[in-house]
Image (tube, rainbow, N blue to C red; front, top):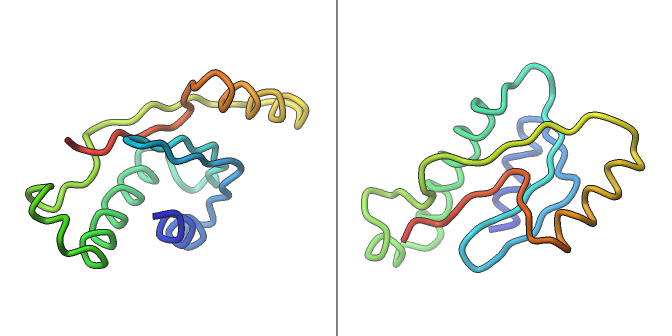
Length: 107
């Protein structure tokens, strides 16, 4: 899944600063270019990654109907400031289990 997400981010010039995959969700700290809004990027990332995941793992169609791999919605938080803030933020993100942009895999 990491390869798919990295490829899709590269295609839209989105920098993955930090990422962490958990059992049923993903944490991502990303830098999105001004030409994209967060909803545009998330729609693209979730839509294209779902198609690519189902193409690579056909057996998942029995567990997830309608080729919907991700649940609706996401959580976003804008981060502005010094790079030192980014460092402390990534520490907080992974040590506390908090999420900046997260997705839950559909059950």
